[in-house]
Length: 191
Image (tube, rainbow, N blue to C red; front, top):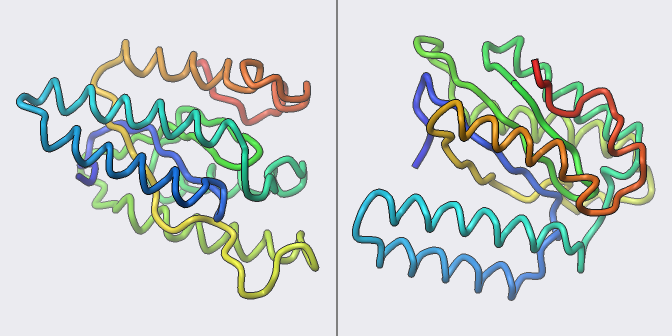
């Protein structure tokens, strides 16, 4: 389900190859089965939140794939392009970059006519092109930088938004990432 105008979402993008294929298929099958078994909107919501938690844990484990976002120049490039979404009319209340994925809180203003899939497509294209230049020789020409698609979780109210922002702020420390991940200037805005 695509977010509608006026909605705030938690968006997750990941680098191509950052999840073991078998584990990704199993997680997706589990998500579909849980959604089909959901008998109420609340049960469906719980299933989506559980999928997010399980998928995020799989990404955080970093068992396969690249960790290109550890490269500070590349991370700064991705952060800059993410903030450029605000020039298209999206609000970006906060985000965090991790070695192989990013989480961003996006608000799609009512009446803007903006499309989340189009915004993500532009973000994918712009950052992948810049990544190829920064990763000369490290990223094969035929390789994708980002995994196709994205995952979004609608945030239902201000309390949930606050919980998500707290989660994002603490994410690098929970993973035991180097200090620079904790102090980059593009960690979620608490203002």
